[in-house]
Amino acid sequence: MSTLMSGARMLAECLAREGVDCMFGYPGGVTLPFYDVLYDHHIRHVLVRHEENAAFAAEGYARSTGKVGVCCATSGPGATNLTTGLVNAMMDSIPIVAITGQVTSKLIGSDAFQEADTFGITRPCTKHNFLVKKLDELPQIIHEAFYIAATGRPGPVLVDITKDVLQGMGHYQPVTAIHLPGYKVFTEGHTGQIRRALQLIQEAERPLVYAGGGIVAAGAAAELREFVQLTDVPAVNTLMGLGALPSNHPNFISMPGMHGSFAANMAMSNADLLIALGVRFDDRVTGRAIRQGNPRGYRPGRGGEDPQSRSPDRGRCEARARQAEQDDGRDASRAQ
Image (tube, rainbow, N blue to C red):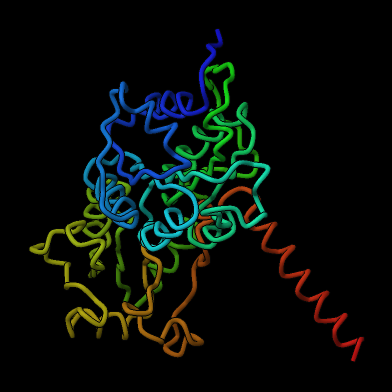
């Protein structure tokens, strides 16, 4: 059964259905309709002194509770102030949903007061982002945003909502299903790849477990300890992964990287097989050895980017952009 309500109240209702009990933000002209709704809503709002603080506070909330953090900012400078926090959440794989206001749909692209291309600006620093210009699309998009942020490799998702959507009136109908054909979450490993990994471990002379924050985020510390014990392979933990393997474990060396120990760095430099679990091969940890041509004989298993760290259609859009750049280059060379 549908209920007539404003877009701002629909937004609050969707947040409540996602289990949001606390959010962080800084109000502005475009987002005032939403803040009016919060006056009589159970969701607690924490007022920050800068939008960047809201993003980092949402990250802290997500880390400490295991839930998706939520932050809110107004259009233009409010939204752009979130970008540092969004980049940090993207790099550290932290699930947050950022809600930003946008000028009225008809004013987009007209250099209106406090207008910025939030959708375009935040593409590189979010797992996915949305621009909502139709009221009937708002509930579905909000629930999709939470689903994308929390599943697969977690990350930030931004929802940019125009002022006319927040002020508009429409019939709200609860969302019962999420269907994203281009976004698949894999919960089981590939049998062939697992066998290949076991073969590499058995053949390796100096294997090393390189574990990071993904172990902590997935709650897989017990599995990591079991794996290390079964294989009797030495292990290092990154800064984000400290605690996943107890520091008093006989196989634990220490933290690697520029702020790590000599023993851990030498272990990584001299290993002939890195068993990377929940890490992203940061250059401050691995140095240049792995990034530049595999000089020490590392044997690759299955590398590359986690497919779940990218949103639906993001890869296709970037491929089109690269093709357009190539076409422009060809046209320019012909003109010369």
